[in-house]
Image (cartoon, rainbow, N blue to C red; front, side, top):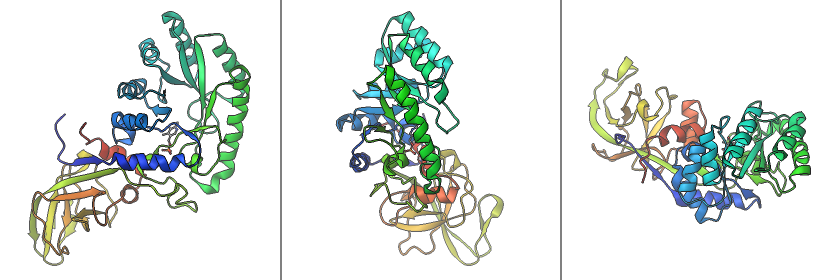
Length: 371
Ligand SMILES: *Cc1c(COP(=O)(O)O)cnc(C)c1O
């Protein structure tokens, strides 16, 4: 990989403190570190969880789950994104003690066949469909699912999982409660055959809104990284104090005047109406800095905000430096996310980009260089 021009810094102490904040709710946690820990780096995230004595972790693919194990995590690892597992995937799961999430009959049959062939035990996670309309067995199938798992003694369901669709929206509470109802009815069926099976329903919103049972394992994701899924709703702040974990900076590579009537960049979308000083920052849409930000989008230099002007290019973006008290020079760091002073948050970037903080950290995190 060729080094990107921008620099991603991850504050693992903040990650740890966010988890400590969530642990105050009294649930066991299965922190969600899928998709490279939302762009923050899955290996280091796994090491922090191990250091904190967390007993569960949720990765994406089986391969990512194996990375979590290789990073030294000793607890249970659920792979949320297992296909109808290939035999190699099941071998890897058995060898590394990973739990694929089994969500359909194809997957269940494939995993049963594979553990028979290789004659090894495997703990699996079972997905119940409760209203997301995505993955999982329906309530009316659960009896047959329990029978099918019980028929293969090498398989043990260690946890039943489902996922909320609208737990972050206080106005949709009724729907979320319906999902809970279906989930626990499915769990009752499974518990008749597998009394030790754990339950895991709540994402960040489900956890902090208190929808799930006390002995459930909750699966927070976004709050680990410092962002509130209830932002902008009546329940904003319910997560408690969270600290942002990712920072992204890029160097200024050019600082020059823009005279009255001169324009910057493609499409000439910004024309100076007075004498301006502008700078070009070495980050663009190739680095995940989106091309069409809303008016008002800012970056931060020495703790002070400067507006983005003109069109974002593939590897460069222009900012208006005119109003800065101190003129920066090429080489100075410009923070597009986080940093000192009046820092830009992933929530603000998300608002400017018409998306959510999850996508912001995934996009910008791709520039991270393995430490
Ligand atoms: C991503 C994900 C989560 C975490 O959700 P947050 O909203 O980030 O807390 C939990 N469970 C599943 C199945 C997921 O895919």
